[in-house]
Length: 314
Image (cartoon, rainbow, N blue to C red; front, top):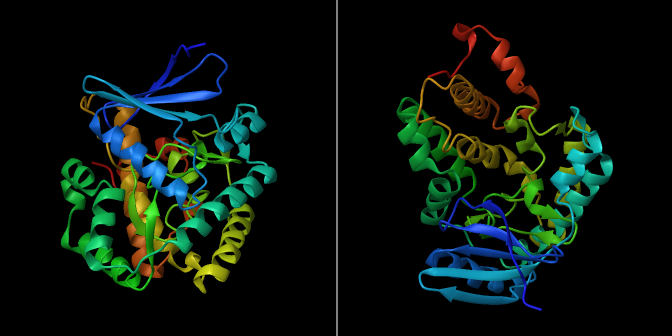
């Protein structure tokens, strides 16, 4: 019987959308010509051993392209963590941390085995593309300073001997399942470890709105598990570059945040919150070479501060 597709959500790339069939065993992704390149990329990295869904079929109607992939399971790791806290705000289950470490180690192993030497041009492209830097600095021109650029240049210098690999760019618990990783629309070259090592750290950029958080001990255990997986392949521990990775993530989470309507106080608050996290990250990284997401205020705590006390506000 031919599948009937139900709309799930819009995508941020390729002007596309995601659809699911009746029994939720298959997903269909639609979009413009960029989706064709995404399908080809997903097929290529599957052949390299990346834990990704197979591309079951491709097709096109006029200018619209589509491909179909199998479901990797009923719940992402984000869904599992969210459901476990029952809508409250609390620590994520240790079982989810362990599952994240397991699938992260699989992805990291494949990436490390097919890594290539870093070049300055490739690192610069990663900074621009993974950080959505053009958008961030266009929306926040006051943050595009020689000082900020110098901090970024120092970070790229520290990564000059770290091999690079084909990466997801938007890896996190919503895209991770015990069986693999979905949604490769924003892919590109990145230093090995960029996808996987920040996965629990970046929960803090959501400001508590995820309904769960990772404790310091959970983050440490997760990173240690990935380091162990990487050591046998790379001979080094990518966690030493977690500060550099989080500096780019601080840019990424500020992208597309400036509201078109500056009278929308909720959206302006969230924009200023992400600006604050970015400036905190830059300051911490410059001072220590690290970014401690455990020091980030929650969105509620940030909102409770008098406006003149909010650093990074526009």
